[in-house]
Length: 124
Image (cartoon, rainbow, N blue to C red; front, side):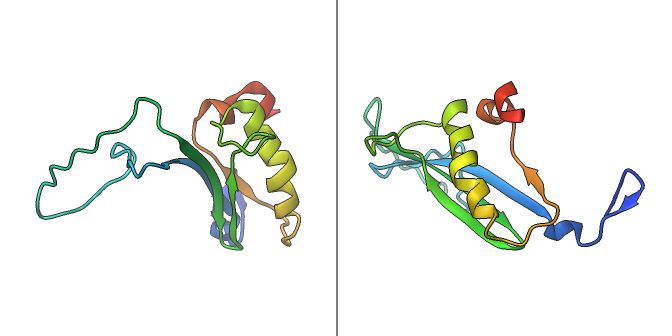
């Protein structure tokens, strides 16, 4: 791969892909985020409570392996949603120490455009 006129050997081995996902604990699957391929059109309806309990999980994948999963929980151990403060705490207290266990010289960290990723404090 050539970046800014500089050849970066094994660039594909230096990209770390990361993301969060929400898992509903009552079995509900958000079909907007998942694709089901089938020859028949499944007409399945699942009744769900207005605010079902869910679990937010972060994980990263790269040529060096998998880092995670990380489960977002508060100090009392209850499942919580991801916000900027919690995301930065995960990066500082979990991701960086895990990454330090690997021989990493240069890494490209990929994130999507979620607010917790693009907040000024996170970018800093």
